[in-house]
Image (tube, rainbow, N blue to C red; front, side, top):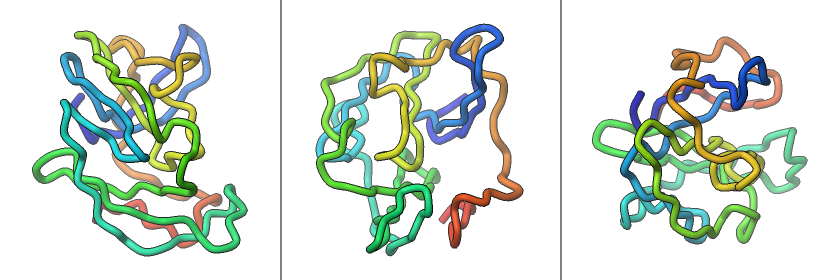
Length: 147
């Protein structure tokens, strides 16, 4: 697995399956500053991609859609719902070998590796890489295609 992959995993044997994006791999440092991923001490590039209304957030004005670039040739959409949301600013995390740091693409509405109660994911807990989304009823107007 590599940065940018969307994976399905469990946190404990027989537990609930989750789907998140790999942002950090063993040896990386990851930090959030003002909602921007800092990977190995450098901010990840972001581009504005308009506004989107997501029913789950009940946003009246729409949420900001961004294109995030985790590395050369890797780009994907993320959503930023609010400035100053929990998880927008963190300390520095060092990803141990054999673990992954994961984030949800709907950043302000995701429980993920930024939070102690969720943590980083051991490689053995990953079930596989998500290849495509067939349909998601909660994301009206959202394109799961890479930009």
